[in-house]
Image 1 (cartoon, rainbow, N blue to C red):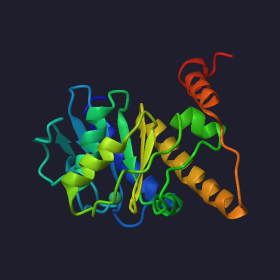
Image 2 (image 1 turned 90 degrees about the vertical axis):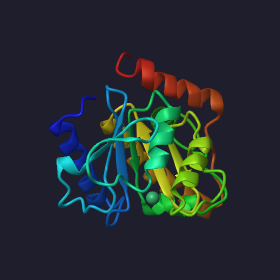
Image 3 (image 1 turned 120 degrees about the vertical axis):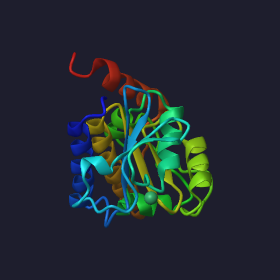
Image 4 (image 1 turned 180 degrees about the horizontal axis):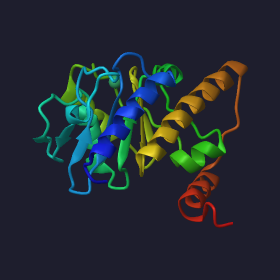
Length: 217
Ligand SMILES: [Zn+2]
């Protein structure tokens, strides 16, 4: 993606969408995208989405150096930077504080694959970050979350909230919705006393179908 006015507007509109969808209250969510130039475009810290302007967004280099912008980038920049550095297949990241995913993040497990949607959009079970890190410890939080990321397109930050990824901002938005929906279903299933999960060969086949065969058969 090119760092254009339109892309910056799309990111701000996605911030507003997160709030209208109930995935975020206040400014407790943030977004980043990978630019074709190799740097990362990321939302600023503590700017209300309703008044955020395209010029408020910040560009960071992969090493964390601020390349463009006068605002401070989101305090959760290190987890965005770490994931974009670790996963070259990921071009957009959405971090929310959505309620069912936050509930699932307060358990001591991730979320097993319980639906076709999870196979195809996420590509496997949603992992949970290895241990709790207070969010004010930005660098350590980013390090632990990045180390816990798998090849799946989401992660639950322990006692904090979900991060969803995609090849595009549009795909990351759908993943954010699927993560919240999957966590809601998972918690409902736990309360019901049991569930049947989808075994690995079917998970991989579903993901491969989504990436390579979807719309062709
Ligand atoms: Zn957060």
